[in-house]
View 1 (cartoon, rainbow, N blue to C red):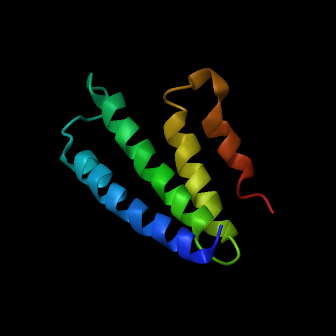
View 2 (view 1 turned 30 degrees about the horizontal axis):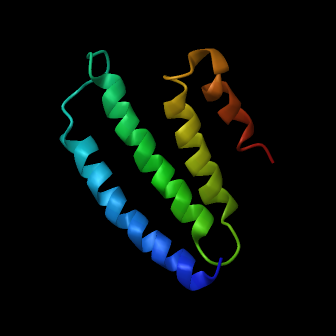
View 3 (view 1 turned 135 degrees about the vertical axis):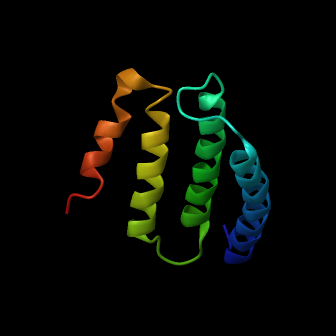
Amino acid sequence: MKDDNKIELIKTSWELHDQVETAYLNHKAKQGDSEWLEKQRLLLADMALHLLQTSMKPGDIKSERLRDNLHAILTISDQFLPKAELKKATEKLYDR
């Protein structure tokens, strides 16, 4: 994919991000509420958009940024897939 296409995708992703982040920030659920997982879905979508931005940015991928994106996605996803132990998998992301 050409850099111009990547930049256009990133631009579009920021528009989506603004909508998702606004919905997340306006969601009133607190941990333990019946709507908590719905709020977490919004957060997961937000983090997925950040991963898209990290992966599509022209040039070399920033490994620190990629690790941070994956850490957030795995941590949030752990609530949806508790048997997969995704939170535990994050421990190795920062090993050097």
